[in-house]
Length: 472
Image (cartoon, rainbow, N blue to C red; front, top):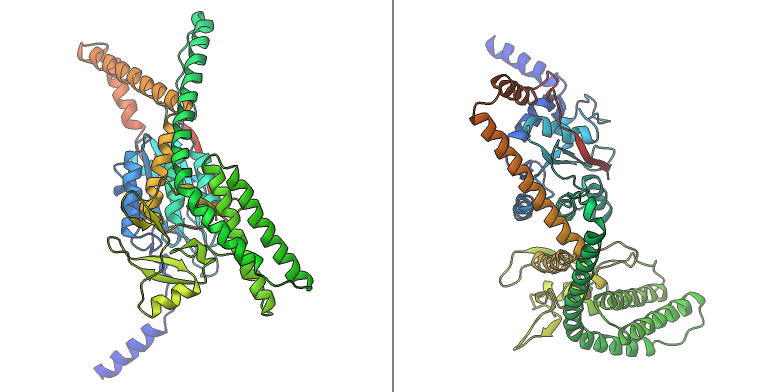
């Protein structure tokens, strides 16, 4: 009898409908958990999000901690804040900037807050939301940072967050000193300083770019000659589409030749390699038309050597002193990998020996940028993180020498010094036994500003300085 009752119980339980995964999630409780991981500035990623590797998270967290603005970023699954009981649509507990505001409410510290909501699509809740809350201090380009991050890099999370952190710490409204009585003289001094600083920055950059050109130009001369010979060997055809493709490839190579002859810096190098990449893609299109196949979509160049042309496959590859990574390769390199053979890598001669081109991060930054550009503002992701980091350090060094960057740093430091002086003066007044009624009121006000409301947010929010929200 007991066995019979147990069987009936099992059948009854199995007949109950399974609750959707999000039904067991309390968005308020979950956001409290997220906030507990972001007491300090940094990046926290929910373990259920698989789009970021542990090394990428560590790099992003370090970048956020080093930022001049206090930046806190959480990457969370949409399912954790979904209040819908239906499996057919999503209803997030909060929308837009309010998602970031909920994180700010729970941490209770002024600063920049960003929340990247992970999902399969925008309709499923995927989006990036950020806000700056502060009553004092500078205003940062948070809204613009959201737009730049999504426009440049979505849906790739790691470059999106890199771009956001970089832009979100730029001061929008620097501190200005009221010097009206000396406006004329001050304007002259500032103008002279600005001109000398700008001239020095341009001079230093031109010197660097001249060194880059000395490395890149011999490589590009060699590539243009080889590609010209390949194009010249193409047979003459009367079929209109093939004829047009052949002419377009020839014109593109000639444009690259003329641009290289007049090259002065990195912009020219980047333009030349973009043109060469387009020419090689044109040859692939021509081969497809001749074979009666549809024209393929543009793809990133072969990682091992951009001269191999557009990639056709993806492989896992591990350099001698690096981590395994997924890279795009051409068909020939794919076959060599399957056969266990060494890849044919584009080598560049250094001071003493030849090394892979990606080890020349500064000299060949523009070379790679051009090849990994689609020519319309969109770019492919270059898989070597050390190359990207060193290239960005070089560009940051250039930017830091500009007058605007130097003035922003100066005004920010000055503003911080004035704020510290005011805070120390206020503290001294309290210690000296100032108005006890006023001092107590101030402490009560500070406490009340962090009191939580029943809805999970704070009863008082600091001023919204900047913010933005984008689905993608």
